[in-house]
Length: 508
Ligand code: ATP
Ligand code: MG
Image 1 (cartoon, rainbow, N blue to C red):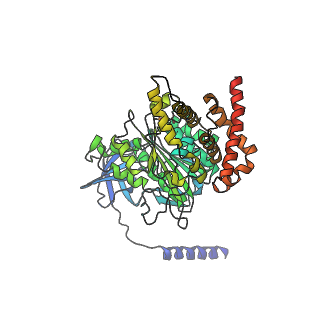
Image 2 (image 1 turned 90 degrees about the horizontal axis):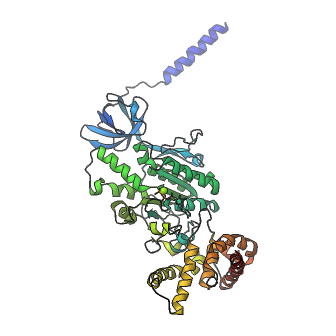
Image 3 (image 1 turned 45 degrees about the horizontal axis):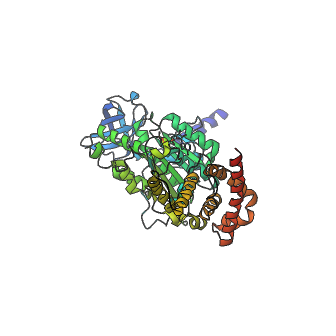
């Protein structure tokens, strides 16, 4: 008896399943790999696949359509080429390349397709968004008005960066480009910003050092590392900055502020050139294909500030490498014209132990003072000019004695500025520290102290202000302004500390 009911049930559910099933012809174009080499597969028989289409290979590998020719497309592979052979079937997924976005990515180290590289599980994404998305239009943007402090005095005082700005970090090999960007990421531990570090074509050991530094000194739970290092497939390196930007947009669209560091676009350009030459695009200047400017412009245009009612902001710090300080090479000039300013790092300064080795004359922020807190702006005004004058004077006086007392005073001031601007790593200065140092400098408090004691002053200042600065710093901490009375008080506080460290210096 129970047997027959069970049979009836089964029969009924099967019938229902059959009724639900939709039967239709499934037409699918299948292409074939005609040849494969250097991470590129040539495919025939997929005439309708659009540029950027995500393609699936018979063995489970993926790639994207990079160039379309008559009767053939060139696909860049994301995986090892070894599994792909001529004759293999390829299907057009009908979709573009996407990356996961959302909170689940925070704290993770991922490849540019969102696959874990840190041994953790696959991140459970809220959404998967295309890596290529349109940039906000002019009308949709808002003014860059809020600061994104790096904690590095020379940058925050002279080349202030705002949320939503794009500032290029450019310099020769090993001049501290990555270190400066990492400093900016680490300093965001005091803010609510989400940081995304994108590595393109970097050595695995260098990426490892960045991750370790952020884990030790920063807020890694609000950072995401997107890694397409030198050993990754060229396709992965190529999409890395775009994937990073999409991840940043995921946070921006929820009203958050994101900082994206792209380390570096020179390598990215080289990868683009390599792929373009392999897909037989006509080479242009320095053998880069003609669309190299458009490639980086459409990437960096996506960094912007939106009105608060719509979303947050993306601040971009792309990095570029120069050769022998040549800023007018093709890729650096392109990037300089795309971004809102550049921080130029100088080999000679770096060698002379002036670190960060920022070249004050060549660096610029086209947003600058507008985003500085009023307190910092009020005390930072003259530093750049004083410093520039000092550098010129120093050159001239190197060969002879100094006569005028005015010149002597200018040189003494300049030496103290230089000592202040050098800053060890992982010792970011807060708004109040920077304001106090520059206020004291402008009031001549530092002129009498030995230059050798300046590092000690800078190092002890934050603690000094925390214990004694309560009243004087109240309004500065609340709204970023500094009244005349408070400014005097702040200078006096620094003067007390100057006396303490000067005595120490004299003893040693
Ligand atoms: P690459 O061209 O190899 O990418 P880079 O320009 O990114 O180099 P970094 O790797 O950031 O340079 O720095 C090179 C070296 O300089 C590192 O060993 C780092 O420890 C040191 N360095 C960078 N900035 C500072 C600093 N402010 N103080 C002391 N040392 C520093
Ligand atoms: Mg580097």
